[in-house]
Structures are given as structure tokens and as C-alpha cells.
Length: 376
Ligand code: GLY
Image (cartoon, rainbow, N blue to C red; front, side, top):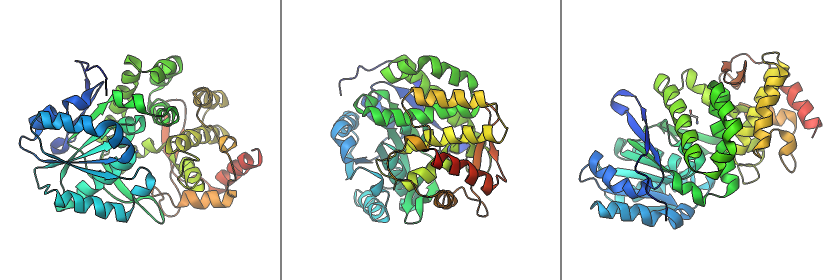
């Protein structure tokens, strides 16, 4: 990696008492990994979990940074893709961490995107009944969402992320230079989660994104600003509701509709998670307008920005067959946010004014989605 090392990374603190940690954001930060770990955990040993793709681009740089600080590191490389969030791969990673003699006081590093963060984080949560770990997210989606907040999980045959634990990292190091090697489609999918923070609670940030999204895509200070604002927004919500008993559910804006679409597409490259969230947010705003909660022009504005940046905004943008409306409702009901059989919807009273909607009528959703399916 040839990224110049900036001297002024930004820091966002997730204030959770004894479980507080920093998110450090800046270009070239992988080079500082060894020094940061030596300062936090002198004499710790480390096991780095990465997938094959990330290992090719960033593992050598991470290992060199650790070696420079005299830190011994073992590598655990897993196949790329959601398939690695399986019981089999989870067992493999746990056994590899144990055979690397990672003990209490040592560290696991999750180097990669959401899959590796979830898998390695969950392994760290249970090995020796809890081992400390660092997140080193290398995708935009992981830098603004999945590496922050301590949700870790693997998948069940019944659904995604159904087996997991809350386990906060001790540090998040978001090296924005790692985004240089990200395929544009992956970057765009991660951008959906950035837009989410504007749509759910920060209208001024959404307006800023409308004006500056090209600069965010291009890289540089605008991109770092967007990542910092996103992490600050997430940190603030997680601080108030670490275990999602209330307000944290707002972070699921777009996820109830999106999850059903992602499941309908087999959690495959046909529809990436961030793309499903974008389509889901567009549907949530459209449904909010239909319910009379938000003026149609406001919903159209939200949807227009998602379309403008190249993200899907509904069923019409998903290629290939989609299941019936009843099947889509069934898929929503398999979401882990289901309470007494009914999924939780995050709806909006305006841009930047999302809320947790209880008691949404299944028939209203059925009619709304039925029309969208018919209009494809
Ligand atoms: N990705 C949603 C959350 O962390 O709560």
C-alpha cells in the first residue's frame, strides 16, 4: 500500500464506561497498528483474521506494522464471502485462535469487511469466555457501520446473524486508504449506510451529502468527513442503547424491507447488503408517504438521492425473478427484529426524523409491496 501517512487522524469515542473505545479514522493508519496495540496492550500476542481478498491487499502491511512494534502475530485466513459466517468456519477460527495460544490479555484483530468483523468478533466473544479484539475495517460499510457497536454474529440456516453476541472491540482502526482497492459497486453499497445516518437523524448531513457525494466517492477530506459523521452518529446511538432495547433499532432503517429482498436474492452478489438497505430505505420512505406520515415530495427527495448515486431504490431495480408478496412478508418475519411475529419497521416523519413504528398493519405492507411488484 502506497498511501501517504496523514498526521491528523480523527478520533470518535464510543463512551460505554469500562467498555469505551476509540474509532480512529484516517489515511494510512494500518502502518500505525503496532504502535497503537503496544500502547494499549503492552506484550500482547495477536491473531489476525482476514479473508483471502483482504489478505492479498492488506495483511502484509498489517503484519509489518506489528513486527515493527515487536508484536508476534499469527494469521487466520478464511474464504471471502457470507458463506464464511458458518458454524464450520466459526469452529475453525476459534480453534485457530486457541492453537495460536491467544490468551486473556492477548488480542484478535478482525482485518476486513463485515463478514470477517462479525466472524472474528464472535469468535473473540466466546474463546476463553471473551478475548479482546480490534476491528480494522477495510470496506466503507464496515468503517461506518458493522465495525462499530459490538454486534458480532454468524448465520443460521434459518437466517442471517441469528447466532451472535454483543462484544465491543477495544479499538477500531479505519484506514481510509484501504477503500482505494474497493470495487466501485462495494463502495456504493457502503455509501447507502452513510446516507442512512442522514435520513434517520441528521437532515443537515443529508443535505451535505446531496451537495458533496461526488467528493465522497472521489476520496480525500470529504470522504473522511462522511465517515467521521457516520461513526459519531452511530457512537451516539450505541452509547444510549448498547443492546438495542429501543433507539438503536433506528440503525435498522431500510433493513426490514431490505432484509426480505436480500433473502429473496439468496444473500448473493445479485443484491449486496448495502444495495438492499438502499432499496429498503426507499421503500420505507415511500411507505411512510403512503401512510401519510411524510409529504410525498420529502420521500421523493430521499429516493432521488439514492438513485442519483447509482443505488437501487425499489423492486424495479432488482434484476431477475422476485417471490410473491406473501413470500416477501414471510421473509420479513424471519428477521431477528421480529417481536411477536411482526417485524419492526423504521418509518420517517421527515428526512432526519425516523422512528420505530410499532403496530404496522401487515395488510398495508402487503398492498404497498403488491403494487410495487405489479409495477416492475
Ligand atoms: N448495524 C446496526 C447496528 O449496529 O445496530
